[in-house]
Image 1 (cartoon, rainbow, N blue to C red):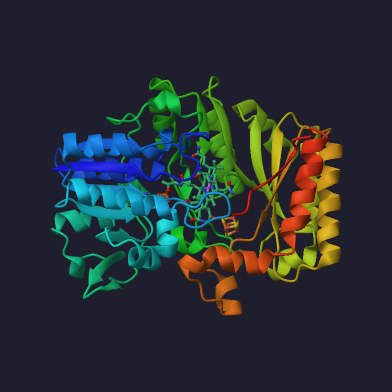
Image 2: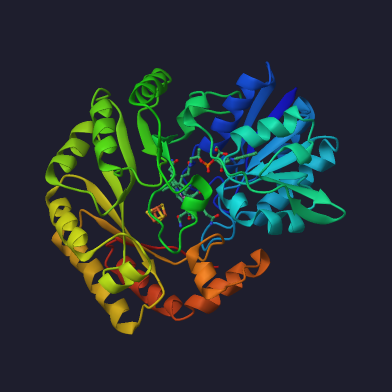
Length: 429
Ligand code: B12
Ligand code: SF4
């Protein structure tokens, strides 16, 4: 069987830093092991600003029977991908009309039904973790009656085969192969690496617990070491941990850091929660080869952090930022603008704190502020009874955050004017 795995392009294709398609790597490795020697080819369309020629050339030459497409960012302020997905699916059906087109990925999982209504050339969609359902779908010859987590077409409607109650057992997953036919490893500045799946927090605005599970599933330390050895053997020297949060659970994160320190030539980066830091943890991070870290702080108002169930408190913010000012780590603090219960006074308080972070770290650190994205499957949606329509999503977001646009633009202009380049705000469409 011939399988083509495509990383769907976006408006950043050919311009911004490439992100290694880890989701595809996991799914393809699983299929490679279970399907008995399928022929597999990869195509990362984000490499090319004008991807049409390379896509059509590959389809003609390889003539795949099944095409799997990874779709990361559904309508988002700076990185909308949906029109590109539509174009890619259309070209596939034009050149290999008999190929079965299957889409998956985090952005797809969030908006699967709407995306398939809008993009008629996608035959099947997979919600959540793709390894098992994609294998079962192919293995059952696309019998959706037998497989959960599948979006499919039925009498011009999009149906769903029902959510599976189970998440994959990580021990059943082979180490994801990285060096696929069609992938040039040296094109990626950072390579993804997973030490766990899931998140045991349940912040009101976040879909991750629903997508990945409400508890952490950890890979064994032995496997992490094996996978790192494999990556280093391929010449990979920069790794970004794609865990929702790297530093929790605290004890296992400390153990992982011990493993990482056996790889002194590798530079690491990851997402962290502001809770769960102490001096010895920071020392370990530095010793293990972390140089730049993303720390989610969200908002500095305790009542807002509490009412959104973030699990972050004032004490954690105070203590962690104090420790991080003095560290050698370059910290990228992440704030969410527009959380429920935020008012003008709170906005000013946050801006003041952002400035403090920059000054106290002597501009070593950076601040990223992004408006709250309203995602399906979140408490935020349930509590406020918001209906999300993918096609009107940017309009919904603009309506919710209209007051931020001018304010953010002024701040960005000032930041540019003084060449601080420390306050990065994403563009709004
Ligand atoms: C790590 C990460 C980053 C890192 C990536 C670092 C790196 N070099 O790898 C950085 C910091 C760069 C980043 C940036 C951004 N990110 Co980000 N990021 C993540 C995170 C935490 C992990 C992604 C990952 O690799 N996961 C590991 C793999 C194995 O999981 P997976 O991709 O979900 O794949 C599984 C399934 O989805 C499925 N699957 C995947 N592909 C396919 C394909 C097929 C055919 C099938 C069947 C199944 C399938 O099976 C896979 C295995 O189970 C996710 C959250 C998440 N839970 O995924 C957010 C996430 C993907 N990011 C998100 C966003 C918004 C962004 C940014 C736009 C932020 C910004 N404003 O700049 C940018 C966009 C960058 C870009 N050019 O695409 C959103 C996207 C949501 C949306 N709106 O659609 C997510 C989902 C977080 C969230 N909940 O809000 N990100
Ligand atoms: S925002 Fe972060 S900590 Fe909160 S539920 Fe999502 S992944 Fe977990």
